[in-house]
Each structure stands twice: as structure tokens, then as C-alpha cells.
Amino acid sequence: MTAKKNVAAGVAAGVLWLIFTDINVVQAALALSFLVLIPLLLHIAVPKRPDLQVESLLTWLSKRSFLAGIFGLISISFNHTFVSVSSALVWFLFMLAVAACGAWRIQKRGLYPAEETIIDTGLIFTGAGGLWLVLWQGGIDRLLPYDELTMSLTAVHYHYSAVVIPILTGAFGRLLISIRGYTGPPYRFLAIGAAIGSPLIALGVVQGPPLELVYVFIYAVLLYWLSIWWLCMLPKISLRSKLCLSLASISLMISMGVTFLYALGVTLGEPIISYEKMFYWHGAVNAIGFSLFGTLGWYLLGSLPKRKRTGAKVITPKEVP
Image (cartoon, rainbow, N blue to C red):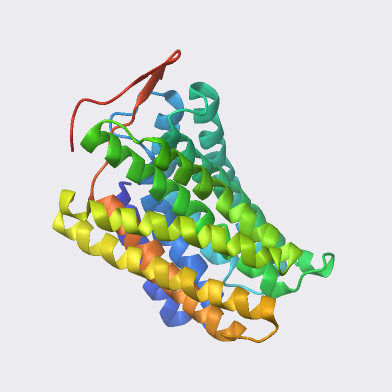
């Protein structure tokens, strides 16, 4: 199925699931990723006029994302361990295939150009998302020094910011190439930050304050930079994409601002924002405001051509979308 049909089927399945299932916020966030975000992100990741075998495989996988998403949905809908784990394993295998496509593209091309590598980084992180879903459903928290909530939120993290931010940052790089023919050192620095940001945040959670605050501050600065740069590019894109990306940029700044205030309060020992408020503000604003509208904005912009690498030479696409 096309991305549009995958998402339409996903929305229909999601609505029925909401009607007949008693769910929590974490389950709702994961369902949105299974049925809507991943199909759209895979479509965005495939460049206009793909010329590699691995990109044809990625296209094939993206057309079957709805079926895989149903298994992801089943894994979070039942309390039966065998059903949940086996369904999560199917989703993990699908995500592992997507991750392999990202690694394969890097192997074929190398680490340059930056906008393609950051897209591949997001694809690789999908494998981590699938793995954490399996671990959570398998009750691995009983063997690790983390509670079930931490395990579930880690699964959400690797279905959202760890995947969405790199792929959309890469799509933005393709747009810069299409408009002005180059990305430049500032973009390459931003791409590196987007690639290491999620592992950095995970490391901060493990280490705790004060390093957690430092890592959150660095990541927040990078994402504010990305958001402002998106807003500066709005005059050059279509109205529908402009509306979606405006909302996404503002939502990302709100979300990271709330996260930084929470980390600051933890470091100072005087909470500025409670964990519950941070959880709902960061989670809801990030999932709906940034991830959903940001992904929709780049999807509506259409497939963008990529730069091709021939030996040491990088060929810039001549057309402007």
C-alpha cells in the first residue's frame, strides 16, 4: 500500500482500537507511532528517484508498514505474555529490517553527505525501538534495576524523538540542497547533534544530575536551533507544510523547555515542574505537536531528491521541488 493508504488504514484501526480497548498514555503514544508515524517516516526516508537496491527494499517495507503495525498494536493490547511478546517480536523483526536498510545505505555510501547519514541514523534507531518493546513486554524490568514505567518510556523514546528528529533533520537537509545547492558546516554540526542527542539523553538519565542537566541543555539548544531554522525556511514551502511545521517547531521548543526546567529542578533539589506535569507536557506536546505535525509537514512537502556519491565526488540534484 502507499503511505496514504497505510496511514488511512492505520487511523481506522486506531479509532476502533480506542473504542474497544481501555488504554493508557504510553499505549496511545506507541499506537500512534505503529500506525501513523512509522509509515510516514519510512516514506520520507526514501528519496525521490531511489537508485539503490536497499532503497527499493525500504520502499517495499514502507508499503507493508500497516500490517507490521497491527502486530505492534496487538503487543500492547493484551495481558497474555505469549501473545504480547510474540507480536512484539514480529514488530521488532520489521524494525530490524528497517534498521538494516539504514546501515546498508551507510555501507554503500559512506558517512557523507550528512543529510543522508542522519536519516540512516534514524532508521537504525528503529531497531532499538523494536527491541525495547520486546524487552518491556517480556517483563525484563524484573531482571534490571529499572521499573516497568522506565522500560515502557524507553520504548516510546525509541519510537519518537530517537527516530523522528534524525529523519526529519535529514529531510530538512535535502530541502536545503534542493533550494540552495548545499547544506554547509552549521547543518553538519546540527546533524551530528541530532544523531547523538538521544543516546546522550539516555546516558544522562542513567548518570543523573548534574550531568543530566548538561546533556538536556545541549540537546535543547540544538533542537531550538533546528526549530528556528525551520521557521526561517517557511516562506519557501507550501501552505499546508508551512502550517504543520510552524506548529511542530513551536511544540518542540515548548517540549524541550519543559524538559530543561524539570532537569534543572532535579539538579537543584527544588522541583520547578513535577514529574507528572513534565511527563504529560513533554509526552503530549512532543507526540502530537512535534512528532505528528512535523512528520505530516515533511510528508506533505513530497519526496525530495538526494545527493549522490560517486567515489569521492558528491553530485547535487539539479531540480528544485
